[in-house]
Structure formats: structure tokens, C-alpha cells
Length: 224
Length: 224
DNA sequence: GTCTATATGCCGATAGAC
DNA sequence: GTCTATCGGCATATAGAC
Image (cartoon, rainbow over all chains, first blue to last red; front, side):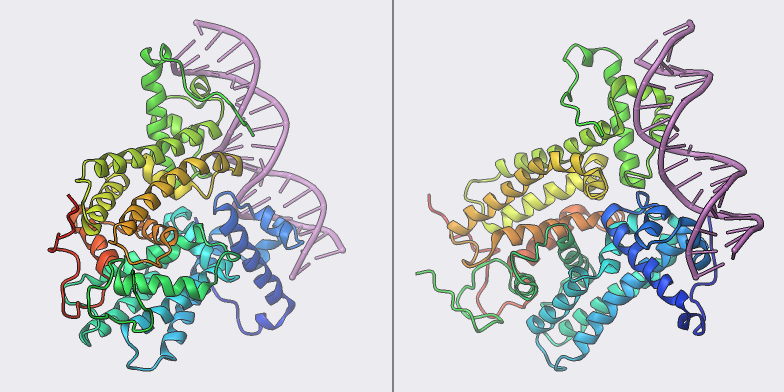
């Protein structure tokens, strides 16, 4: 019930102690939203975890909607920045497999390694009030289109077989990546290995190589 | 806060008008849980949508926990039955691509075509009280292991390259499938086509075919 | 900036009339 | 089987002291 236009504090405000409180509130909110869901996380719970009282939150934010709105925003921005930065560090003629491995690992790293904002975004997006959700769809869409652009460039260079619907491919890939929040266990296996396996699946498929090698020369495939 | 042992009504009860009310409550609850999330769906809202009053729900169920518990249960059972039934109708020597297409299409059909229970399960599982979640993990695990068994059998027959971690593959596949609840638009494209594209991605990958064919037309796999 | 105190309303659940 | 009435509790949000 907010539709607040303002969002960011002034630069001056970020220098006062308020900035740390404000950030602590956002950090805590992201963690609790991820763990408990949106509706089940009360402002009292957020305040308690920050060693504050519920009423004090309203000095920094106008409403619960505004808090969750910023949490969602930061979540997408963080994974977007991480992936873009990693991909831009690649050699410009990196092949399909290398590009996928790099982008997938960056996305998964932002998602699984101590980033409550990113995983909160995925888990609570469908639970927030519809006006909050609507105002964040464009940022999500930008990120989707970034991936689509990546794949389109690879397709033009002949690294992806023609006829593939790349939008749908991106959605499948997002699903495989984002679903890891439901099962990934850090103790069982490293993240780069998992990223490699997904990149391999999407590049080469499950089917055994027929005769000639395909993309990854490294592994020997003898079944004798 | 329930830990209720009993669950199903007696056969006699299902013959009275109570059965229809009971089923209407479950149907409505599944729809609202899917749309709004678990915590945001009140018993009053469920009752309203059933043209009842909130107190009347307690004739059929002991608690909100019990309602959501049954909704979750039905959701997994429904998709499990759909997939198992479809796969059992396959020829026993169906190849990887055909098996995947069949199972994926069945799973997506249960998920996307008018089955609130199935999509509610996916969306609210992470939001329900932890004791409810715990009591349904075994059913989910059965379904995962069914898929893993499918792939293991195919791997033994040489249809899946060795060295692949099939548990992880199943999780990636589940992610790609379950994420479709977030973006699938029935008007844009048919479900069989989408299932085919995912099956193709997982079978052959994005990489263009090098020289020889890979899986599709060649069915010289016969061991009759 | 953070506190206490409070307004207002919906929540899950129960009791008992019909 | 469904209703009305109600309990105690917790929700978001506000007002004003310090």
C-alpha cells in the first residue's frame, strides 16, 4: 500500500551511523526473507535480529514493502554484476563451453555463497505484493536479456546449432541454476565442479559421443 | 503445532456430502497457496472462496497445518503417478531421447495444466512449518529416486555417457522443469514442443553436431 | 536515531447454537 | 455440517518522549 517514489538515501546520510543501521536492517531482512519467506517474516523479527525495536525501522524505511523492494533490487543487481564482470574478463573468442562454465559459475557463486539477497530474491519473488513484483520485473528482464545476448552471439559464431530457441534455453538454464538453492550442499562438492557439470550437460548433453569429439577434448571416453 | 497422526477420513465419510466440501476446501487451498503463498493465505480466505465460514473448516480439518500437509502430499503423488504411468506405457527399449521426452512432458503436464496441487507444492514447500516439511521429504525423495532409477537404467544400456553424476543431473532437470511455473505462457507455445526442446537440450546439448549423427534417427539399439 | 506506548485489524483456533 | 461469537495473540504502522 505504499507506491513510494523515493528510494535511496542521500550521500550525506550514508556517512552517519544511520547507514550502518540501514544496511544491517537490509542484510537481516534478506536473510530472514530467504529463510522464512516474505509473509512469515515480521518487522518485529527483523528488528529483534538487529537488536532494535520494531518502531525504529520506520526511521529508515516507510513500510515493509519498501524494505522487501530494496532487498529484491539488490539481489538481482548483485548477481547481474557478478556475472557480467566474470564474462567480461573472458577472452573475446572463448568458446561455448568456456563461456557457459564462466557465467554459470558466477551466477551460482552469487546465489549460493553467502549472498542472502540473491537467494531471497528467487525464493520470495512470487510472494511479495503484486505492485512490488511489477516494479522489479524490468530489472529481472534486463538480466534475462543479458544471457540471451550472450547465447545469441555464440550462435552467430556457429557455436550453437541453429534452430534453437534461445529464450527458452535461457529459462531452462535459469531453472537448473536457481533450483540449486533447494538442494545444494556445500560440504558434498565444490561449486566449480557443479558449474562444470551443468556447463557440460548444456553443451554436450547426456548422449555418449558417437565417433568424433565434440567440444571438450580433455576427457577420454572409453567404455571398454 | 499439531503433529496430528490421523490423516484420511473413513470410507463412509467420503460418501456423505462432507467429501465434496472437504475436497472443495483442498482444491481451493491448493489454488490460493499457489497464488499467494502459505503464510499469506488465511483460513478465512479459503473459507470465503468455498462459500463457507472459517470456523466450519475445523469440522473437516484439525488445523491449517493439516490442510497444507494434505495439499503437499497430493501434489507430489499426482505428478509421480502421471510420470510413472506415462513411462510404463513406453516401449521397454525406448532410447534416451524418447524416454526423456515422455517423462518430461508428463511432469510438465501435471505441473502446468490445471493442477494447482502440483505447482502449489513447488512454490510453498519452502514456506511451510518445518515439521510439515520434514514429514513430506520422504515422498519427494521417492520421486527423485524414481527419476534417478530411470537414468541409471539408461546409463547401463550405454545411452548416457559414463562418468555423469546422475543425481545431480536429475536435480538440474527438476530445476529446468519446475522453473517453468515462473514463465510458461500457454498461449505462446504448446507443451509437447517445450518438452521436446528440453529433452533435446539434455540429450544433445547446444553444441552443433560435428559429423556423425547422434541419437535421434538411429535406433539400432535393439537387443531383441 | 532509538525508544515506549498504542491504534487498528487480521490471524488461527475454540465453544456451542441450530 | 455449518453457523455465530469470541478468545488471545501478533501483525503493520503511528505518535511522541528522550
